[in-house]
Image (cartoon, rainbow, N blue to C red; front, side, top):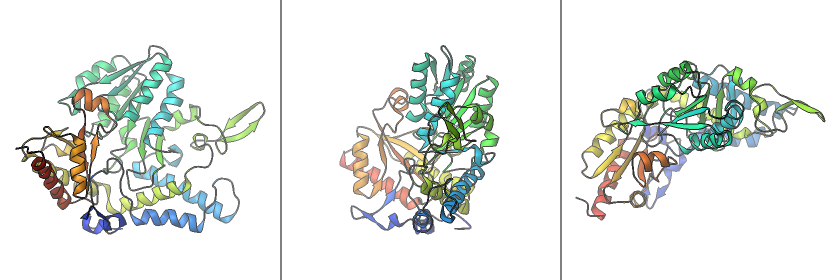
Length: 416
């Protein structure tokens, strides 16, 4: 598709789910930070694979297998172009961001972390960027450090500089917080870590779908994100790695396609990236991801970022006028440093109750700790928070519906 300006009303026409009613109301989907909806162009690409050239890849020397292989590999080139990676050979397909980060910990981390080494992450990380490093640190008797936050929103740079004096072997940080919406200065943070001799891993699950991302300019060593958060199908994640690291890192899984030869005495690995993709991959998922990238590029990532920034500013300003509502992350007016995510709390009302009332109005939001328990419970000191998150199909009418739902919550619970 091609639009002069991002028009959510027109975009919604590509998403059949928005033709459905929820509790007798139009669907207002404000949970894209968890997973995005899928346009018919992506669904059609997957169906076309099954109907037209369903075959395994890298094996058959017949027409439809060759076509499947070509489309699978073409999707990697699309991914590489989309995030400005060197080329498709730096792109490994896994199931999701979680598996990508675990893969780094279980391969590169397993062979490069020793007793007493430091690993550095931040207090705003998703569990996917905490637990793999906890497990690695435990296995290796290493030390896992957490960078504290400034104003409960931003990585505290002086503390980060101090922790880098420990010369951590690995620094792993989120690009955009899934709870706070904070957009980290990831290029600066990466540069600081590289000067300390660290290998840098970036969790891009919340950035790649929503803004232009340039991995080459960022300078990180590994970068992870998911298809299902960027209009693509579930079950496909992306792990980018620098060529020299991928070539010297042992694979995690063994089996078909990741080998060049197998003998009783041992095996030799395939070239990168295939040595990290054992067995039959999610072929239809890769094709669907390619279609999702086509769709996003047709709109333009800077337009998407501008739209979300404007919509988030509109929502933050409206929420700030409602007494008794607390937001977390960058303050109103700091939308340039916030993605399209707003976590909030209503005094005296549990987020699960808030979510249920929103659902009665046909509005989907998330409630809980958002797979970031240390941030929510130890930094924000909340049992749970509510979260609304925006994407290309949201507009000011959706925000207005959410504001009306907040006021309904206040009315039901008699909050002045």
